[in-house]
Image (cartoon, rainbow, N blue to C red):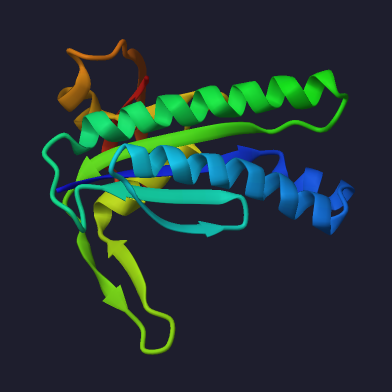
Length: 177
């Protein structure tokens, strides 16, 4: 199994319309460079960024039994860095971003694909569930699935949020970390 982290900035599209391209890229680079350092320190593998979305995984390609814990620790650090950067930008009267983070643990298929640009990637229902955790989260909060909560409940304070229903009729319990 693996633990997947999705992060996405609230209001990015609107901000992108108002900023100069170079400034926008510089802003994203500042955030994503910080995220890269954090996930690496916690043994996660950054998979990709798509626009303002960031995706990382723990447990593959390197097995790690602590992957739910390390992913939660990384998410808490990412949250802290984002809050600090937001406060700094607001102090300078610059547009600031808030981040939604979603985390889920489950089985994945992983591998390297491509011939010219090799890419390590993951697939499976667990990936979709992690994305749902992010989409149904709240700005400035870390939203985790019941599976993640089960792995980390003795280590972190969790706030029950209720459930969402997927398009396939499955109920997913959610918790704020």
